[in-house]
Amino acid sequence: MGHRMIATQAYGAARVAAPALHEHFHRHLDAARRGEMKLGTLPDPATIELMIDAAFWASLRREEGYQPLISLAYLQPEQAADPLVFEQSLPLTPGALTRVAPAVERPGIHLGVWPEGEDLRVWGTTRAVPTFCFVLEVAAPGLLVVKHDRGDEHLKFVNVAVLEGDEIKMIDEAASSLPDCPPLLTSLLGFESPATWNRPVNVLVQVAVSMREHGRGGALLVVPSGNDAWRESIVEPVRYAVRPYAALTQLLGRSDEEKGLASWRDELTRAVDALAGLTAVDGATVLTDRHELLAFGAKLRRRDGQPQIEQVAVTEPIEGGTAALVHPTQIGGTRHLSAAQFVHDQRDAVALVASQDGRFTVFAWSPCEQRVHAHRVEVLLL
Image (cartoon, rainbow, N blue to C red; front, side, top):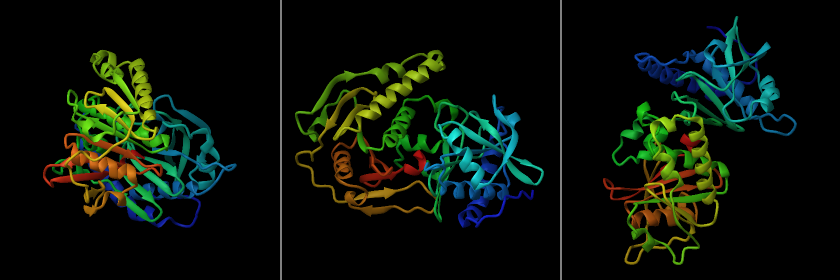
């Protein structure tokens, strides 16, 4: 298929990434065809390269001072639900994408891309795409994310790759099979069966996304319910201790029938955003593993009798990534150091830490390694 785009300086990473992305989508679409769900169409490597190239150069432009934040999806109007179709399709060029960007910058709106003759064209917009549809999102200038839907419009898309400048990060599908992989990371990677997508761990995924979006940085500690040992790692009195607040617990305890309603989804989103908002307050927010809120603005301290943490193992779930042993302050500032110390001292707890610059780390104790493991997961949250 020889699609053309008006010539511009080539974005080298597009050509390098296209074959690997084509292989990824081919493999997943092939496996998914055994089911009955509506599936996306596989773009060839040349199409993937052109879409990435156009999106990258558009990301570096400005329209009336604004950065274009767009999402491109490879599908035809017949594959979309209630599509908005332009009478005249648009060329897939950086200029055309930049000009239309203000109309489609809200989350969940995709520009549909499909061949017309020898050219790739933008035919309109859609809010719904088939499972494993190729989606390319501009997250920031020079920062692109390739992702796909996992079959439910209410759940976060699964990230496949992140391209930033000349750096290509392919998400490692094998990361979830590593020993001690936290359930939160498995859910973020998106390799669970559809039956698991309403499980409580996915609420933490939504909280993580919301924490990252508020941009203030924050820490969330998930501690065992019915056990107050975590208080030994907290400076008393806690500034904003609360009576156990179980709004999330109650929402997750509703029947499967209620969980299928849009009103339940809306309630859950509001509750998640409210919890994530608390993490913007200086100090840590404390949540039980049953999603009961216990405190926010809590100051952390080293547990009596415990040594100062000196090293954590750091990994990122990308292909070719290797574990590094570093001092916690090499990941971030005092927030990261105190979260790592907390998990070192409270080994049945997990700490989620967002940085103001968008980095996101999940700290969990690794019984195999006998040390705190810091999972850098921002590539999964974009």
